[in-house]
Length: 154
Image 1 (cartoon, rainbow, N blue to C red):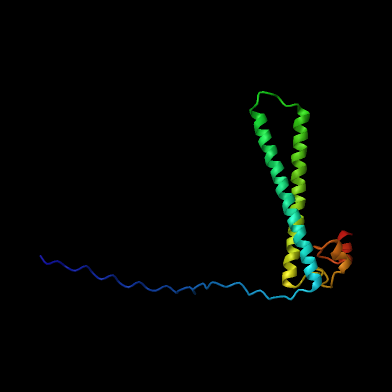
Image 2 (cartoon, rainbow, N blue to C red; image 1 turned 180 degrees about the horizontal axis):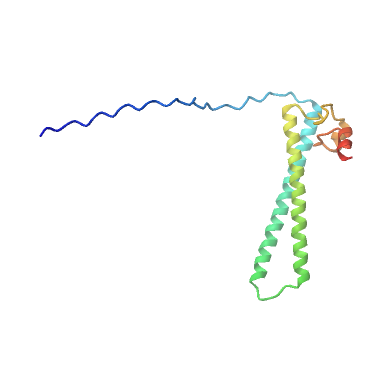
């Protein structure tokens, strides 16, 4: 008996190839020449960012210590007085609220620093007019001019 050769596989019909995805390089950042005022505000914002980050670390450390103390007291046979537990709960909730506020401020500061890098710092997000320097000196991360902020708060 003769051995037959295995039939050649039929070439598969080619599917319509999807266009190859190209990696898109990020758009090159425009180098914005910073004015003396922008440099001053950037220094203020960097200092504020550092202060807020330090404050967040301190809050996280306190919260971690409270959690360790709480775990240790759960294991002890000594019962805590309900007032002590309420005080600990109050302090933890206060730290969490302060932490959220600090994180919000930190986000605003980081946004202001990004605006400096893009060259849009000091421009009102609502009306696109310049924000007065006196306002920026008081609140360097302000995104609205006084008039637009007043409208927002009404």
